[in-house]
Image (tube, rainbow, N blue to C red):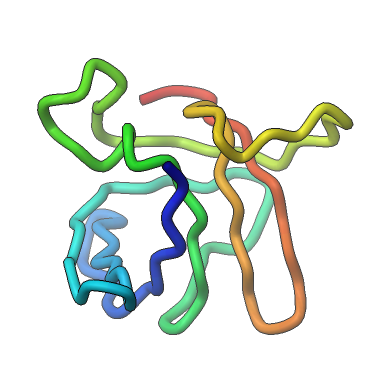
Length: 97
């Protein structure tokens, strides 16, 4: 399952507080971004729930992402996330984490 999470706070060391508007659940993730400006408050991160649950084999922190130009995009992949900032949309691939 893919979730749309809003950035509600950014702490030291790239710790992002993300909130699911559907159920008000909050997530704390350490995220690094390369080749792109970092997300800001109110931006949206589209991410697989597998990367959010500590008991899942895919879970690890920190996560690092960079822009991808891959034409075979599937946001259900645990290796890709979406990033929506104002009117811009980006697809990022996981490079570690």
